[in-house]
Image 1 (cartoon, rainbow, N blue to C red):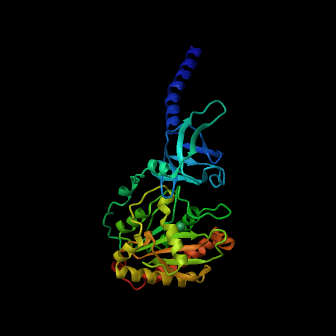
Image 2: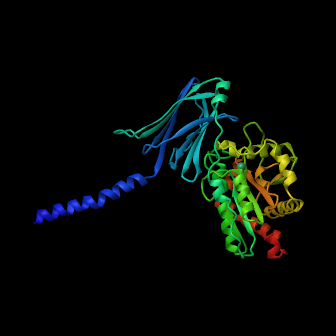
Image 3: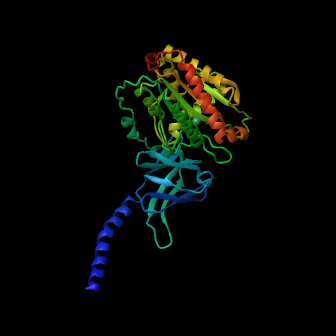
Length: 401
Ligand SMILES: [Zn+2]
């Protein structure tokens, strides 16, 4: 009897726990644990260690030439600096969340390649599961023939549905932390990435604004996920935002001189100077660096400027000046802190929009500040002050358009 009940208990135990175990197995999150490159300029292999086997799809895209690897949801727990070394045919690779339930690795190429093999090996004994991508060198014509046009992520439609009318009269501010996911933005010599630095400042600004109880806030991203430039604009417009603030950090490449301090940009058909043009070109390449093909024509800035309403332009310029005034007390400003260029993300015809470059990741002093909690606090307090000034004197109905 006693043995019988133990047996029954064991059976019940098995009965109860087996399905739970199976459930945990299927829900187990996929983790990328390590990554390495091997080979030379004729054949290069990328290996990613995973905690379990997954399905992947790899393909090439052109202009710029890249290999894109689409994965299901994966958490990247790779060693610091992974993807930043050059080897063989690969100049670097980036990775991150691309869309809900979808991760992506983007491989930057030094030469045109053909994807020779892509496969995933299940875990065996002491070996983790491994994703293997073999690239072989090819000529440019063959590369271009096999390169595909990437599809638009599904998330755009869902995120940009017109929002319900609200009776809340408080101005709605859209905060736009630049980059995200496989689009890492500028990288500091220390390995700090623009997408992380700007997200922290954006969150801080959100918290400071909400604390005043005078504003509603929508973030274009709250985590390390890719959001296309079109999508960012659509979020501002569909929310009928009263103000759009895009947050970035710049970087100068080695040998390009030195620069430091914050700069506020507004949309302009003609860049205010060649530096502003360089920056707009770089920021407008955001979609491409995540392997996402936007439907923007190449000379997008020219078309955009005509679309923007005069009123919106005036308000964008007014806010930019106000922000420079407020930031003077808390941040080091660039020697010409008010500039303009053709930024895609500033194109909303009906939402006053500015792009803040907090500083330069290539400047050790700027980097130290941008990664400091005290500085972030100080700077976002100044931003709120500028926002208050901008909306002061306007009735809520006007402020809310
Ligand atoms: Zn940026």
